[in-house]
Length: 349
Image (cartoon, rainbow, N blue to C red; front, side, top):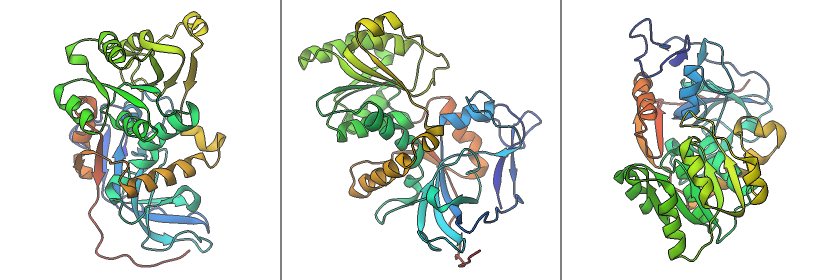
């Protein structure tokens, strides 16, 4: 099968196999994974979503280190191609999505059936690849950790990216007043089109004055929940518009700078600071990922959330997708897609 392999850590925007500096190689004869247990399922992948974490992983800068060689990729969608003898939830031909620590930039993946989620009719299968990780992160952070309520003010940093856009949409479903932060007129107009109540354009200035002016017009005291996948300077500015008893969701550090939140200010303002790391959530909170994924897929089927796909690339064009992520061009998600097979042959372990 075809698979994109990280052979050494480095810059993934260099075309695969183009030079000795390229960390990526496109294998056309990578072994098709075999079923590993009677309850395992092999999925022919239709699409895999590229996340900023994947970019950091290949650079060797992600929190969890992967030792090369490894197949790149995390969340994916596809069609069941083979099932183990004890599988009861799925059959050959079913549409599914899931996520993994690595391995989805390939034509096939093997997972345990409990790790897979059925994609309902009416949901675009390519778009469903963005559900488990990006939308799952935002759902669990906002719904489970901060318990976001109707009427609260939600401030979303990096709002045009994958998890940020998910947070904007989920915030609106929860009934929150959503303030989105992005850079550039195209991103600003897009965020307005998906329902953000106010958008701060960083290319026209900082966060503080824009947010405070909006809060005054709505006779609101401050921001109740800060959703922060960015870190750095914008986090520091955002702290100045938080309400008493606000909640801070630490999602990531796309700016490359880990912010310092003054403990004395958090004390006197009664802030709650939540660290949220999706990677080990299933092990520590069994069932939460399944519950959130099913809810999100239901919302997607009903049209309550829409996955905006910035661009889809083929596997051999993965470096272009990484470049879009690096250059912060992406609005929503960038995807790697595979051609449909001519037919699927039923098989069991």
